[in-house]
Length: 294
Ligand code: NAD
Image 1 (tube, rainbow, N blue to C red):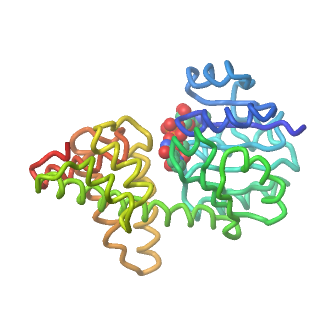
Image 2: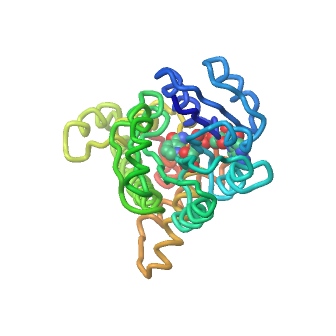
């Protein structure tokens, strides 16, 4: 059986490792947060002292850290994966990061005889816990086929989009659609509430029609019940929208709804909301409406 490595044991990484362990895999782990390491070791994972140490004993190394500089540090930093990785291993980066940097990382690893897939996910904490993540993959088809059985333990909708970076491009598109959907959901619920309707009943009714969505289902409920602990932090969604806005600029295209969503997140950030769940965008809409949804 292949030895797996997993680096980044956050909100997403911990439940994903749980599924790999439950299927009988050996999983070597590292995170700078020792509390997170203890939690997965209690479920059967093996703690290693660095990313380098994970790489030196693993055939497949999964990375799930916040941002592009974090992936760079994990892969190429002091005591990073590149310092210990065996030729023939496969690095699978499931973090959401820059498509351009991804291509560069894949090229550097390839020169060392190491294959890479970018495989960011959508579906959030609930999707990770229920192993129903959507996984969007970039890389070589034959490497995708080899890793697919592991993806199937963590997700349901698993699609090879194209070559290196294509998975990350798909994820940026996903984050545009999600952010704009959050504004729509927040505005609809704030409007209904200020007009005197019960937002919980409105959400229930909308879930049966054209306005239904996973965002209306999960985040609409969060907005009504005021459960803004993450989840998916506004800080991370802002990172993804930065990638979207920068890429749109270099493509000479305008994505005005995304820019508005980023501004709404800025407004929540101004009230110390960077580490709230992204459904807390409703706080900015409520401010403008001078009315709370619930
Ligand atoms: P998180 O902040 O909860 O976890 C990230 C983990 O990485 C932390 O435990 C942190 O200590 C660790 N880490 C950071 N730098 C490290 C390093 N150099 N070496 C070792 N460990 C390091 O983040 P998350 O919510 O689990 O998200 C992870 C990735 O998945 C992000 O790119 C995010 O955009 C993406 N994502 C998150 C969600 C979600 O709902 N939370 C959904 C889809 C995609």
